[in-house]
Every structure is written in structure tokens, then in C-alpha cells.
Length: 303
Image (cartoon, rainbow, N blue to C red; front, side):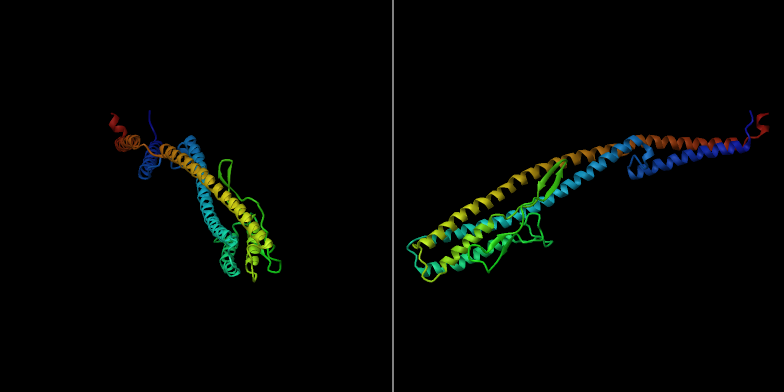
């Protein structure tokens, strides 16, 4: 059977292009270490890797959210710890002020210390974050948690003007964590301390006076209530931190599993690739040799 020269040329060119193309693709895969250069290399594996990639992106976002929430909770705990310390110091002064042996001068001398502690708690309650948002105002982050009205009588100057709304952050599939805490209730302590400061600052203040003693007792009771309130808020942070730590660890384990699976599915098998490369090289050499021999043949060679 005779084969036209043009048909022979086209057949050999096609064979050479196929082998050279396959060789170039395989060489690129070996250079990059990737099994898949384009989705069509293995559509099923590509779909699986895409799903794992999307899941990994979601896990990374969860981990980032957890890290951000932990930082916020840690900062909030620091400020609340400061309030507890100030309240305990104020309590010590109130217990001392309640001693019936104190003179008016003794009581007057306690005013400056109590005022500093009151103002410190007020300042902490109205703390802003680095973005200028109030951290203890619930969801009303542009509003101070506690307001102060100097025109009101002592004992009624402070008011909570935030809310108790919760800022929920997604930290897992269907799992959210409250990232904020409000200062509701702290204003009651501020008012009671403010009233006690006013009573202790009066000329001739007497700890045995019924009115003064009642004010001091109310301030002591209010301090105990406030300490219990703020300490309870701090305690919830400990539980939240433990939950977040566990979630973060779980996310990290799943992420590691995903990365191992993606690596296993997407990584080139160099042993198999080397065998295939050798096969393509052999086929290419055979094609060139066949082309060379056939191209030199003529009708006279068959005689």
C-alpha cells in the first residue's frame, strides 16, 4: 500500500507534537511538583482539592476570629481586674471609715483616696479600644458606658447609658462566641461611693451619726455586690477562653488533615513521572528514527 508523502508528513508531525507536548507537560509537573496543572488533568481530584481548599479558607477565618476574640477578652479582663482592685481598695477604706473611733479629720482625709478610686473605675468603665470604640457599652460602641452629671445630687450622678447587647463572633460551624461585656451595674457602685465621699467630706463628719453610718453601710454593701458582679464577668472569660482554646486546637487538627490530603492528592509521584518521562523520550526517539528512515526510502528501495 502506498502512502502519500503529504499524508506521511502530517502523520509524523502529529506524532511528534503529541509526544513533545506530553513531554513538556510532564517536565513542568516535575519542575513544580504538582500533579495537576489544569483541572482537566484529573477533574475528580481537582473537585476534591477545591472543596478542601474552600473548607480550609473557612477554617482559617475561624482561627483568625478566635485569635481576635481571645485578644478582646484578655483586654476586657485586664480592665475588669483593675476595677476589682480599685473596689477592694475602696472597701478597705470604707471598713476603716466605719470605725466609730475615727475623728472628722480622719474621715475627711479618706476623701481623696476614695475619689481617686471612684474616678479610676469610672475611667475603666468608659475605656475605648484602639479604634475609638467603647468596649463596655454593649453594642452601642459609639456611646460611653456610663455618663456623669455633675448637676445631680451625690448618689445619682452616674447612669449606665450603654446596653447589654452581645457582639457575636462566628468561631466554628454554627458556633458563636460573645466578644464583649457590658458595665451594667457599675454605675450603682459609683453612685454609692459618690454618696459616701460626700458624707465623709462634710465638716464634722461623724462615723457614729445615723445618716453617715447608713451611707457607709450602703457603700459597703454596694461594693460587695459590685465585686461579685465584676468577678462573675471575669469568671465567664475563663470559661470562654477554654472553649476557644479547644476550638482552635480542633480547627488546627482539621486544617492539618486537610493540608495533608491536598498535598497527597495534588503532589506528583516522581517515581511514576520518571517512568512516564522515560517512555515519552523513548517514543520520541523512535518517532524521529522512523521518520528519518522512511523519509529516505523510495520506490527503488523496494525492488
